[in-house]
Image 1 (cartoon, rainbow, N blue to C red):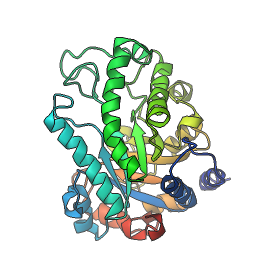
Image 2 (image 1 turned 90 degrees about the horizontal axis):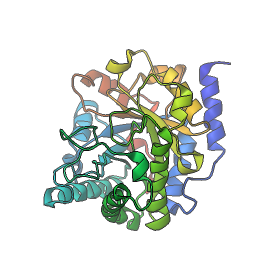
Image 3 (image 1 turned 30 degrees about the horizontal axis):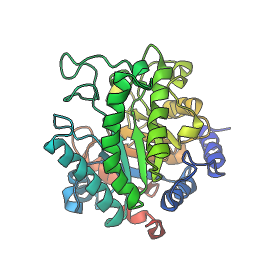
Image 4 (image 1 turned 180 degrees about the vertical axis):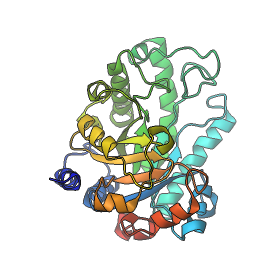
Length: 344
């Protein structure tokens, strides 16, 4: 049996319908999840990371796509971290609100899909970033203590998450479904949340966030996306980071071709697709980040047909304009104009 046939069988198995991670998912989010299942294995959704903005001209990377290819992405990626230190200062809060406003507008005004990652800054210090030892001298985060109720680390993380959830509440109240991707590149080792010594702590951190956002805050608009990083680790080791099927709707991986030694012109990263099928069997699989979307003709003819491919940069050195034009106009790719209006 061909690789493509196996991929299509996996897609059909998923389309058969497993329960969402959140059993109380809002109708709009359930509708979106059903749509994603209906296209998985048939077409590939084109996504683009962007900056925030309420008007379509305020999404710079999105506009670059349009100027280059005459098409808008169907899916945009925004953040939930405010970046500007200190955490929860005026500038930080302003950035988070702008991201939320951008998510609202992309769904409500432009009728596109939204995914949001959370570059969660080290919650133990006021100017912490997602990366290890950044800023210089940042304390090591003991993830085991952080997931232990009542510890100083746990209380700090819970308070920080509480503040973020206050902003996320706006999207839940507006019934805007979000493909929520926390702890991205979860097993990579370059972000503070990756416990390389005991991955089970990182898996517990995922479950802690899920239990808080869904169980306590009742944010029922979230479709949960698990994304791995490019490492040389075994499947068995990678599985130790996985929080469990009941906490995940979609799984995927972030791949940058200059780092993995594969050319996106001729490869669709079948080896990574096969890897993630073993880490998260039965889940729809997405290329959650990439420097350039792999060849649609390869995905169409040989597979894998990822649920979506999300380019991290607009046209540039790592995402040539001619390639963007070719990809966005390929019939395999779902762009903004190809989304069904009934979703909104």
